[in-house]
Image (cartoon, rainbow, N blue to C red; front, side, top):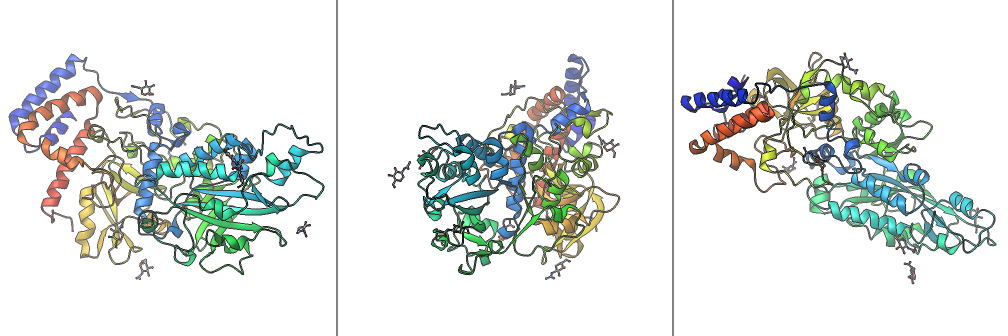
Length: 607
Ligand SMILES: *[C@@H]1O[C@H](CO)[C@@H](O)[C@H](O)[C@H]1NC(C)=O
Ligand SMILES: *[C@@H]1O[C@H](CO)[C@@H](O)[C@H](O)[C@H]1NC(C)=O
Ligand SMILES: *[C@@H]1O[C@H](CO)[C@@H](O)[C@H](O)[C@H]1NC(C)=O
Ligand SMILES: *[C@@H]1O[C@H](CO)[C@@H](O)[C@H](O)[C@H]1NC(C)=O
Ligand SMILES: *[C@@H]1O[C@H](CO)[C@@H](O)[C@H](O)[C@H]1NC(C)=O
Ligand SMILES: *[C@@H]1O[C@H](CO)[C@@H](O)[C@H](O)[C@H]1NC(C)=O
Ligand SMILES: CC(=O)N[C@H]1CO[C@H](CO)[C@@H](O)[C@@H]1O
């Protein structure tokens, strides 16, 4: 193995350097006891594999998911936002009913924002008597007030002085302002359910419960940063992701999902028509303008559980929700995602962090735990896809801690130690990539499997998915096994009508998945992070748009003759210290091949 490594690394360089390197390798090898093989138990492999899982990163967004969410957003840049699939939470059952109608719950709301929940259902209650909007439902108020309310009652719940729509929106705004940057910005949906209630004239509601100072919904929601308005973005012409986020600089859709206000309500919702979209489902839409009215597909998960064909989803926003009687299983959650319906969790969880299991499955594009930022080559793990699918398909969600033994049998497996790369994450601070780290990252190319994209090493031999240049929904498979570099040129070489492809929405993903041959598990797609760690881009020579310095420059400096020797020795020592042979081998070999590839466009391509 070492021989091959050095040969590849010094490919084209002079023989004496090779010999000297070998000597040094040998000397170092034996001076450290000739024992460098790291054999890990499967538990360690699994720990490594899930090192950046959402559960372990709780209460922050995991590093892998941050990369996955961003890749999915970037790949869909030219796709209408109506096709976005976002994980959602119904705040009433998940947060307020479980954890309380108080300011602490706002911290839990903030945590959900942090971990990448993008859709929220929010119930708002209009007290007809005091003409105020409350976050607390009348049933709660009744149970608090009970029979004998006294003015010095100490309210721990529903206290409008600490828990009100204004403070909820400022929590949201705080999150938005922290993530309003090219790396982290993303679309969000606020789905409102409006309710009225009135109290008998002889009942005096305590001021601390009803004095919320919120008498106009639009006055409140207009203070949301980057809120999308139906005036600028009419419902019948929703923009692409790129136009929304970067050209218009907007993010948050406020949508009235249900209007349950009394017919005789004293609140005039039409006053808010410049702020809100209204779902056609909410029925009382006769007086609303066409630019307000959104036709949405909102289904209960029962309708997916056993579906074999995709329920027709046209140009509508689409969501699926569960109930406590029929909660999402991991299987139905994943099904909802893969059919393009944003899953909205609407049942109480034992612990809020349990939502991590679901969030791990919430990208239609990447497989769970992907793209890993470790230096394990995932595809080296036997049956990884079938075992993860088993886990998704068969494990009903029980909230128990999922263990490596659920995933792997006891045969041991060699893996590459991740070394001293102790980049403990960061709440959304992805910009910590530096060039040293860059070299430690093995999985630079993406393959499509039946459960989504998986990062792997680029020299694996796989078939490739080609995409028609004129019709992005037309995919075909080139069933010849080749490494990533050949795969890129192989589609082009066919008849000029195709290029290596990448699915850009759930429909294309399903089409492409169906092309995976029976006897194969993975096929190449047009996605790699060769330019920069954790930055996945479409196209071989695409630089990471989020970094000023590309590692290409570093590489070019490294291969000049004067530095070759120093690099060879350094690499030899690093190899021996940390067993990162394939990393360096791949990294530099690939970089070199890219450079060659860029020089001569036509590069011996299989017919
Ligand atoms: C989106 O479309 C524009 C114009 O057709 C093109 O220049 C751009 O590269 C596309 N972006 C992506 C991510 O496909
Ligand atoms: C709403 O809550 C915030 C923060 O908890 C508080 O500062 C504000 O005064 C409250 N609003 C009202 C009307 O009490
Ligand atoms: C509520 O509104 C009134 C009148 O606009 C204002 O005087 C009062 O300070 C507000 N209270 C809070 C807590 O914002
Ligand atoms: C308005 O309607 C609700 C329910 O439809 C009813 O309970 C309430 O008494 C009505 N109020 C008035 C003032 O008519
Ligand atoms: C990695 O970081 C964690 C948390 O900062 C620390 O507890 C641990 O000791 C570090 N490990 C190494 C190898 O530096
Ligand atoms: C694009 O390709 C898809 C799949 O082959 C096909 O159904 C569709 O009709 C094609 N569209 C056009 C405009 O040719
Ligand atoms: C724990 C578990 O289910 N592991 C399985 C992974 O897949 C292989 C092949 O299907 C099984 O043999 C393992 O038992």
